[in-house]
Length: 241
Image (cartoon, rainbow, N blue to C red; front, side, top):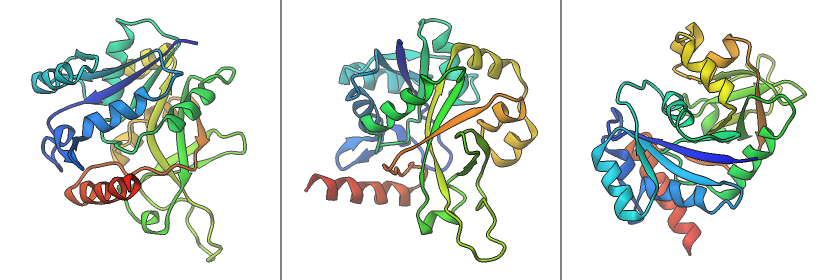
């Protein structure tokens, strides 16, 4: 199974300007992500998909594979789809460019999900820490007994009506797609739930395409704010000592 990992990377970011090139422990965010994915031997190719000349130049300086993609794309999934029209593969991974704690185990778990019969879309979850249950930046997911996602939300789901303390799961920003799923995604209009939650994966669920979710013990912290940046830097510095 040929697997290509794509890291969508825009320079424009409203909450944290130029975040792809912001340094964490002396290393630009994008470099943390690229090197984390590159450590996985199951991936045939890792490339950055960007619409920024500056990011493209940075990748060239670092020896990273990168391609320019359309500035009209509204999501990382659309950017991955453009790559899928140019480079053939069995599975395309979408690794969010703001996941500096990416590690080979994440990629291996995602590839394992995509090897399931009939699986068009896969992603990851991990146990949600107490601090993230009520945090809208940490997306929660609930699944059925076969691992198919029932819903993703920024709200705390399931709702704990009777104080039973259910187990919460946090969704991680890693996706696997078959080409057919990407083709369908870009044909569909933005869905109502997607618009409400600002979660593009809900477009698949609203259109009847199941998303299979694997569990990983390795949590990550997606970087969207200055606070996230400092939090990740502290974690990575501690891990280095």
